[in-house]
Image 1 (cartoon, rainbow, N blue to C red):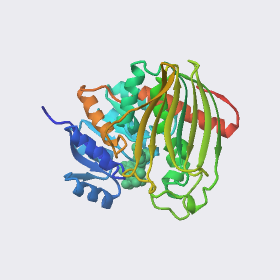
Image 2: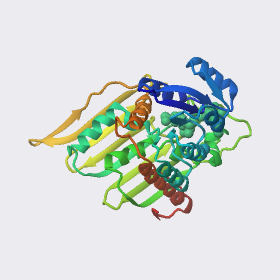
Image 3: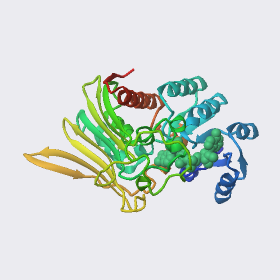
Image 4: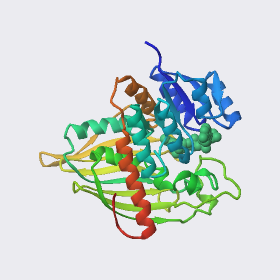
Length: 362
Ligand SMILES: NC(=O)c1ccc[n+]([C@@H]2O[C@H](COP(=O)([O-])OP(=O)(O)OC[C@H]3O[C@@H](n4cnc5c(N)ncnc54)[C@H](O)[C@@H]3O)[C@@H](O)[C@H]2O)c1
């Protein structure tokens, strides 16, 4: 069988996870493109990729035989690059967030339908072993209907560089609300992606001028760059089904420690999925837990679900799933229709925070 051929666009921090996943799933990566030629050459040399290009168009002209493209650029370029690749008949694997807003996401969804090609996003947290274990319990009915949930990605000091594209709203779409959509996405996944109805949120801009709140990773600061995004947001969302979800996300907030978790309360069991980062804030020293809380024979019972350790936080597994989904060997972990629901919620979070009013979700 011919190997699936993938080209990567954007040789940034996430590219090596995409590469590892594609290779592990039996695909080959024959091209990588980035306008930063020093960066792209270093990435290509480290991974034995023969050809480097300056952009998507040049790459597709040179290698029209590519089956799929992965997009790992600043958020502003997700929509135009995805649409261009789909229109040229390629499957697309795009980094999160899917787009800057729901209108862009609609365009991407339409383009994927028109092309009849797979469009998947790097909602890597769904591919974590704990998430896949939890969803089996939920789909088997062990939790019952999930009435309420809480999605949190709260960083105490985690601004990913000042003045670069992350903190420039025109390039990123916003701060932690759009940069850290993973736990919101995971909560929606567990709840069955119900149709959202109303949302009330507040956003804050504390510490966005304070270097003490910079994360241990991210991109270098840009002198005189723009920093015009929120540092935290708190929201409450209801669904047409009667379910409800509280959302907290921050890059900088006076909290005891970083919290990365989804908790939920179901009619038969509650649950909690958490990543506790180590003291250095790194993946390597993290502890992942997956637990269910229930009742049996008059006693409260906690189920501690043990899964294999995955330092990559599902990033490699999710990229593998993209290849398997192209082959038709697996269901995709996420769909563009789900991404559209997520982006409608992101839009509503920003609208409610800006207007200081509850919003009916469109
Ligand atoms: N899933 C995750 O856990 C995770 C983690 C970090 C970042 N991300 C996402 O990955 C994406 C990239 O983030 P990053 O931290 O790697 O950023 P980065 O700035 O380190 O790298 C982006 C790269 O894209 C290149 N680039 C920009 N525009 C381009 C274009 N039009 N064509 C080709 N190359 C282009 C830049 O030169 C740069 O090398 C973002 O969307 C971010 O949200 C996801």
